[in-house]
Image (cartoon, rainbow, N blue to C red; front, side, top):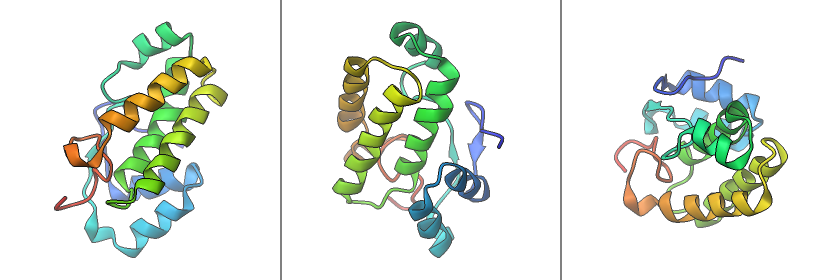
Length: 138
């Protein structure tokens, strides 16, 4: 599996491949049922925080953070169902769990990251990393 590099565009075909890799079957079904609802997006790693800095601060491998935690989280956010607060919370909790279990982050730091995405990733902000960001006409 080839992961996108920071700054690379993720199109629908690659997104589907990534969702399958991470076993995000509900997203595969959603995307395949309405491909026209989504637009390509640019992978930015761990949005707003450079992985190398975060890895150093948290004592984690930057690549594990980027590809085992942030990328699946980005997929959940990109193709999240607009207005679905329960789905968003589930995606954020999985992110927190991945930070600890896949990247080796301390639980207190993962909890801080969780709080950061809960506040900063809100759909209402309409940012490139906000909930449902790959939706056209949001």
